[in-house]
Amino acid sequence: MIDLRSDTVTRPTPEMRRAMAEAEVGDDVYREDPTVNRLEELAAATLGKEAAVFVPSGTMGNQIAIKLHTKPGQEVICEERSHIFNFEMGDMAAISGCQARTIPTSDGLLCWDQVRERLRPDIYYYSRTGLVALENTHNMAGGTVSPLAAAGEICERAHERGLPVHLDGARIFNAAEYLGCPVREIAAPFDSAMFCLSKGLGAPVGSLLVGRRKFIEEAVRVRKMLGGGMRQAGVLAAAGLIALEKHPAKLAEDHRNAGFLAESLCKLPGVRVELAKVQTNIVMFDVSGTGLGAGEFSSRLKQRNVLINPINDRQLRIVTHSDVDRSGCEQALAAIAEVAASAA
Image (cartoon, rainbow, N blue to C red; front, side, top):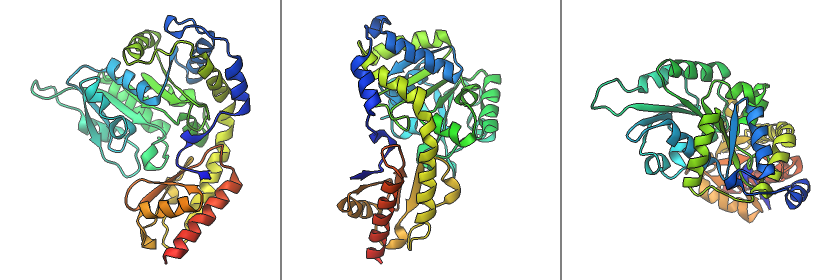
């Protein structure tokens, strides 16, 4: 089975499994797990922040940040298709008492003028803007990457107004690969940032939230409140260390495979891809021209041992990763071509 549903399906490498089995552990709720502590120190240094906290998921990392940056009744400005708004189960309302103020875009990328228009005026009967949140890369826009200048201007102008800015950087290492810069340069202007180990970096579990030391000290408390105290978590952090130290170098191949698939899909009858939006390891493709809905197209691919998820009635999403090499991508492409041809 060729699984291109997400880069979350990657399995730990033999090196990771050995490291997990041999990990030195302690009680991380007491902050005594040496492997977790090493991972947090490396994450903070890599992103150029003072401190980091290891959390079970990217959703938890994002929601801890929202809770710490905001007060109940405030608004969080974010892009309309952002993960924190669409795929975190209304947590900003349930956990932090906040509501989203969304901005629709064609490519998932925000600029300061768009954010400025959504800021609430200082009138007592309006809810107040509490936080601006960006996503880089932007998952549901097809893995698009925020330009450094645009993100930097948003942070600078928001800070002038006393507003914090959080980065959902679940795939920030993919963004860094595309931009050709260190991840710390992307994270630099943000007050906090979250990134995932369990996507393109290939670890089985975990994400990191980074920021100033005082912020992270409070984040540890909220993590415990949300049930994220993981005790001997060094068995997970050991895999995360390998992911963070060695696996960013693998992302270039994932991007090349995504580009190969996107360019090849454009040649198939009834299939449409916006090539300009294929920047990292995500490919959205429209199959409505084949006469099949995306759900039916996905079902027929599964019968051919290829897993690709529909995201709406017209489109499917491919996410390339280290567990599917070029040969696997070629097999997936052949299956897609076969389904498209059979529908004609």
